[in-house]
Image (cartoon, rainbow, N blue to C red; front, top):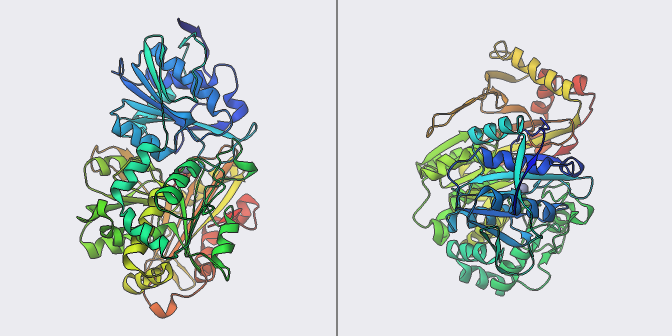
Length: 542
Ligand code: G1P
Ligand code: ZN
């Protein structure tokens, strides 16, 4: 039976870079999830009788919100819900299911790489029919609605059995529980040369994949061990846990330290990789070489034609503004378009839909292509394996040859987490005040060429996104970029992105922080990070 429930707005349901992220106890407040889900439905038009995809990364509170969302979808008039078995769908797999089954959209429950558990993070994101995150005009409408919402609709029925595949009826709507892995594995098999990768692996090439006790475990088990024949045990931490085993499911050099140590050690496998909580990020490490996400984007784009899915070449590359310029040099050489967008995958959607870009990436360990409308961790790993299988060279050789051809973009991101919000906002305001006076100023050997607050004019829908990060470009191509995170759940996170282009191959072997030391010092001098935040060093360096 359909029921309308009276509610009052919370006022704090503003979607950030990737949906609404809050601590679990916030989501557990009365009607909190219901308010946000109803605000999503109230911001959409024309979904009566249509299909909605629902799934999440399996973190704490996933199942509860899935039940809420299914019942509300029925009460609001959707015709069908497709939900992953156990409530599981990785973010790229959800994107694929939306596209493949021509769904109206999808609700993806995840807080990505943030920790999970009763006092940790949870999130709700809405994806549109192209499979990608809702654009700003939709998220703005959702937020506006959430501030005035006075009722929501739900269905008074028992919980759906999420653990048995098959179709059930619910207040005039059908709910089909689907295998979360099958459609995705089939897509990967269509894009990549599985036979070549199988041959590489059966020839003794060793690959390890750390699923970080998060959603990619079942996907990686099926693809890497079962279909590609890697020995049992190649996929580590493959059981998704509601609290990710108490770890941050964030595939970076801090939280995937053990994998990094293994890959740098004497008995290192040939290739190591990891993915995050919801499966859209990737970490790739060759034996003896960590490949930065910005470099990985450039190298994948340069070699994509070696995989069957991209054999005809790529149309263009898109990268977020803070991502290094390494991909720009590849685009230039290939004679294809390069697009610089604000941070967040949603900005790639139009470029992919229009066929302007084929491969996209962000410095934050996100890479993907037009096969779905989300970044895709396993996709990046499989494309690397495909390239390694065809080139028959080590990852280290491929990286060094790439730098020799295109030059090396030394790159690092310094994060200052849980900074006082006023201090962080003051720091950004002060930087914005300096924009006009910086060009022409010298800091030691570094001379500022230009500085601005990045604004993006979408070439497809002509929407304008302002205040996307302060960038200071120096003569010679070095730069520092400052922005505040849009995904944090407590205080503010200041991100400082530092980059230096080095064309000289004789200078490609310098330790990264050392190669960037003068820029790091100048970033502090201009922004007053230490003085304003009271922090003497970043919380995380990647
Ligand atoms: C971070 C990353 C960004 C990514 C987003 C979602 O956002 O920097 O590249 O798209 O997570 O995974 P931020 O916290 O910087 O707003
Ligand atoms: Zn993620």
